Image (cartoon, rainbow, N blue to C red):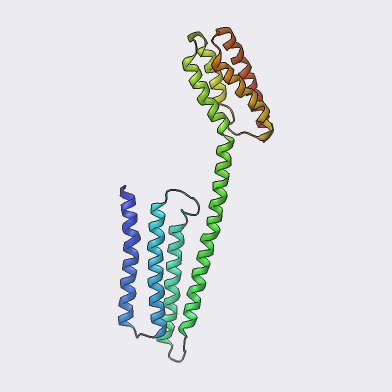
Length: 229
């Protein structure tokens, strides 16, 4: 656990604890009307949600924007909820002729909670979309990634006088566009077959010849990839 995590955990617990103490003091200082009791309960619920949400945020390492949005959303919620209660309590204690039903405060808090819940729900949908895109990108980059790994292994076991030729192929792959496309499936299959063949050859001339073929094929793939963009 790093220092930042410790500080965040203290903050996640300390702020709700301070709020709970303040709400409790107000409960003893002000007249205990139904509005005040409702505001007090709503405040404790808000403090608990703030603590639980922040502790969840600390424990999860990924999931942007869903996870990254939790702290600021919780801060906005607890500020909105507290101000809402403050307005109701203030009016209830200052305006003598105005009778405020605690039911309206309950409805208002439910509405505020629903708004912030929907906001997080929408962000959660964004998270799922981002994860789907990340998986798709990872899949489309798999061909170049595997090609690099195979060529590096082949180079280690190749004759000394052919390693420069294989390195030229590796360099061509390294500076290739990592993204693939379904229209490149046939060409990438041919490249893969030649790489497999390269790993099986032992004659220097044969290795040089197939390295030249691979460079031509990989450059052809790069040109087709650029044309697709």
